[in-house]
Length: 231
Figure 1 (cartoon, rainbow, N blue to C red):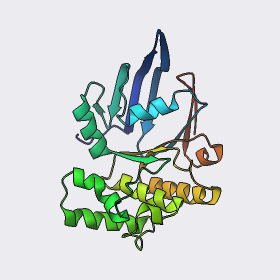
Figure 2: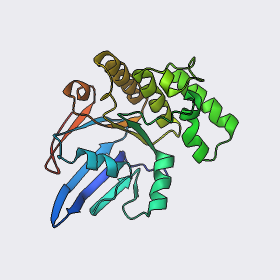
Figure 3: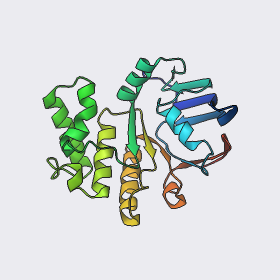
């Protein structure tokens, strides 16, 4: 994927996603057009069933739109096959999940380096990158620990470092503070803000207004459509 002069990291043009459930059609996204500017910190909000999770899944190439066009970093990826979408995810996207999604048997260093293994990096280069990222999130003294030996906040820091391993075009965060207490949530959102100030584009789904207020832009979903955008 070549670097585009377009200022949008992501662009949706009339994105639709329809699910067939029995004899009924459910329009999870009913024609969404949006531009997510590079370097911005977005929060996607809305009630259950509003379409925010479907939007995140399409953004992350985990689901395909029924119609419309999806541009990532200037390239139309709407018609790519599963293998091509998998390649896009690996090379250009970073994921942060509510449940951390760390591999229990791996150490902090190994969890962070995992995407680099699939990218074909050497063990030495991967280890160096993992150590640099662990230090950036304040876990340089925990490299040999496994997830069960870490607090929830520390596990999420590992997940953030792992998401940054491939230097993604943008980070997708799905309720990144959902399993954390309030003080730890503030620490994690502060880390995301710091990454954003460093130039990283972040798109976060959250149901918490106190977390969303830290984003520079807030997009509200309702009934599969964008209700409004703030910021």
